[in-house]
Image (cartoon, rainbow, N blue to C red):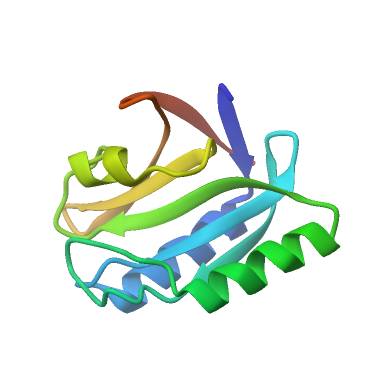
Amino acid sequence: MQSLSLTNEQLNRIIAHVDAHAPLEACGLLAGRDSRVESVIEVTNQAQSPVRYVMDPIEQLRAFEWIDSQGLDLLGIFHSHPSGPETVSPTDIAEAAYHVVHVILSRMNGAWRARGFWIEDGAYREVTLQIL
């Protein structure tokens, strides 16, 4: 996937979610069709850590079931790096289990910045986030 499209409202919802959980990492799923996000699904970070996230498995399973029931696809996973880095971490690369866009939110000078990445075979590349 070369790009991922989401609305400004969806991005603001993601930012509100990660901001509400800072300084802990926050996470969630992005569902839609083709490369356009239609739904943001917040998931509890079971790790409750400022440097790691583990999606609550029950919430994640329910989200996957809902995505399937709506005829949508899993397009992305988002999580925050409240203290950086603004790119993928070695842990992100090691634990990337799905071929989807990984949206990472980091705080720079008090403002959240979102960047998208495709992680595959131990490497990553940046993916354009189109805000509609």
